[in-house]
Length: 204
Figure 1 (cartoon, rainbow, N blue to C red):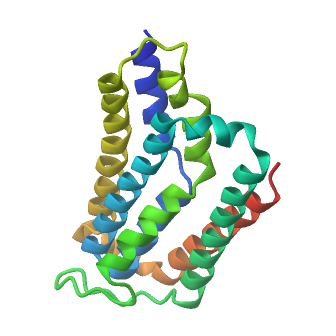
Figure 2 (figure 1 turned 120 degrees about the vertical axis):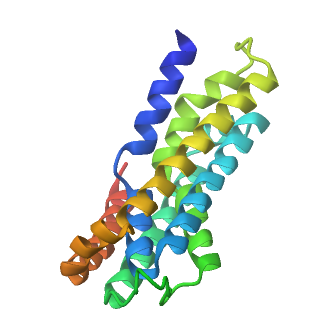
Figure 3 (figure 1 turned 180 degrees about the horizontal axis):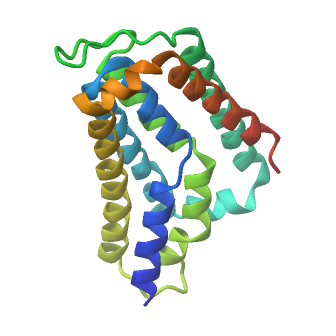
């Protein structure tokens, strides 16, 4: 039953709307499918950071050191604000979905954005501090292979979900609909990232 609980909770964490979702949507619409896919892969691999510090026991330090956790929180807030502001300043959509000609962002840049957005995402960090870390606590009887499989499961969920999102929003039929409201959508995505950044900065 414990495994089922972790599986369901991990799925809910992945599909719940947040900065990662908005970033994939923005990069997919602004720079094409490849950019969206690379963003999704970057988000998924960002999970490896959280898995690593959980296994190494750093999660215990983070959960008991408010200064370190606050530093990560403010860094994440600043990065989300930067991404949102960049999106607001470059919100005009010029992608040709048939020819897949990305604009404004390289795929490497989109990968880095996805990786950092997740690695600095306190929502994901709190999941690993409060839930995943229990798998590797001294009281837990789970072995390292089981913990790694759980980490791989969460990582795979992120990659599959966000790559699916990138495919969905850049399909020709869906893109035609998005294109009619392209400027509004990109402005909304940029504003959403800014709002997430401000909320994170002011949260306790």
